[in-house]
Image 1 (tube, one colour):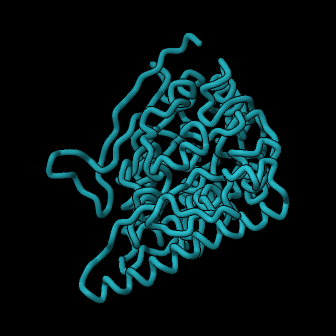
Image 2 (image 1 turned 90 degrees about the horizontal axis):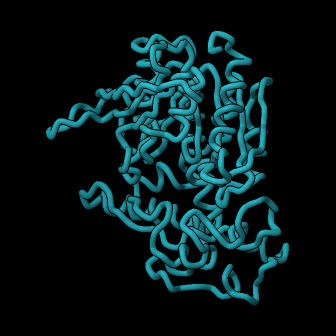
Length: 376
């Protein structure tokens, strides 16, 4: 496309998060617009911790006449400190900026990757406030005064932090403090178990993954109670071996165009033993706030049940971490009567094949303009 794009740096404070002593603002991002134009429709994208200020769709959407605010909350790079209600008011500051400063009439919430559940939670809270504050904390100021989105786009999204972590947990871990401790009967990489994996093995494996999440939750609750009784506030810990979804090993499970035996960090077995993965840096409070199946509010489906605005679900057919059933569950959970699901060629970030990102931008722009003609 020949349309030139302007990029404006945007930053600011948020309730409860002021300017840092060194000068930085807690909220930062970039607003992309077609040169010489003031769009009436814009998208906003945010994540639990990944920097979305220069999101890969930003220029592409601006080229198509739609503004794009790549937005970072106070938790950019600090996922281990994340609390949901504070993040939601940070996103709300971005939405308010688009409406009040950028002159946008309609805001489309882009829930990309892990941001899918986060942006669903934002819209849910704006429609029907229900998010609890973190343990021992007062509610974040302004969390019940958010501006809802006018549409929601789920792009290569996960079902939530607890869900994706549990799907990826190595069920064979027998000691959370020993990266080598393994139950061979549950070892995904033990050739005697597969692949292909039998239905009986998969049932045991999935149940053990859930139990591992619950086991960590039980420990975190008890440990938090113990240390707070002694005057301590929190304690960091690590979660080992988190690249072990059977679908990352066995390509016959939910067949797609993904590369077999690979995850986002490369070969699955090597990644699983690397000591690096999601949830790898957490704390007792953060685990309960973000990763626990029992306690976390960072699960998409309850929030998607309140999404009644137009919604679009895009599933990449070569994704090694988001699978067809994830997109199906997201689409099913959305309450809107105007919802569309499409599958497009591409990996998780649509780096491949050539032109994949342009195809995504074309589809999103066409979908938005069909619902908001003023964007044309």
